[in-house]
Every structure is written in C-alpha cells, then in structure tokens.
Image 1: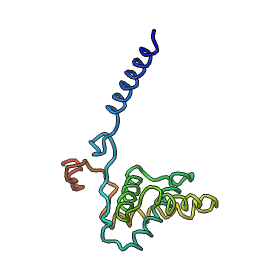
Image 2: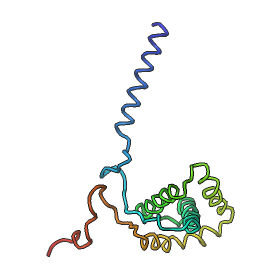
Image 3: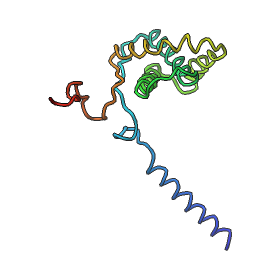
Image 4: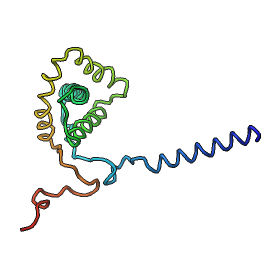
Length: 157
C-alpha cells in the first residue's frame, strides 16, 4: 500500500468521525431533549456597576456550587446562573480573556479558604431568588413555545 493511500484512508476516516460527532452534537437553539432551557432575567436595565457586581456574584457562586462539597444546585438553577452570566458577558462587552481575568480567576481564589464554601454556598438560594425576581426562572421551557402557566401542568379533576 502506498503512503498516499494511507493518507487518503486516514482523511476519509477522520471526515466520517467528524460527521458523526456533528450529527450527535447539541445545537445552539436547544431543541427539546437536547439541553435544558430556562427563561433568563433582563440584565439590560442594570447600570454598569450593578452588572459588574452581579457578574462577580455569579462567578463566585459558579465556582462554589461546582467545586465545594454539599453546595450543589439543580440543573435548572445552574442553567439560570450560567445563562445570566452569558447575558452579562454580552451586556458588558467582555471577551473570554477579560471574563477569566476579571471575574472567574478571582472567584477561584475563594477556594484557598475552605470556609468560603459554606459562607458563599448558603447564598445560592438568595441569588436564584434575585434572578427570578428580575424575570428569570428555574422552570424549563421549550424554545420557541410560550411557557405554560403552572395550572396547565396539573392533572384535570
């Protein structure tokens, strides 16, 4: 077998693998069943200092709830926090390097003191409630469809 044949077989195999991975990948539009989608709060009305302060809180809560034992949040709560973080990144015009430098790395420094896990982790419920008060929700929705009112989800009597 010539080396050219080996290169071509490898190229075709790599292409087939990439096609398969793309077919199984989750699209960004969150088609039902692919990922969890929750309504996000409106962060457009926050002043720059308010947006920066909320971003700092979210970065800290992200680190604590993912790295500290017994400080877990539910999947919808996690999606609400990370989706709001994404909205704030866009609102503040941050690139990934700036976000990492200004918010995420400083949040990781909290882990230097193990007491911060309990001190910050207990604030998760308050932060989630605040995001819900701003219009977000931990109730999953289907993209493109209006959210059903709670009474529509209870069985008829």
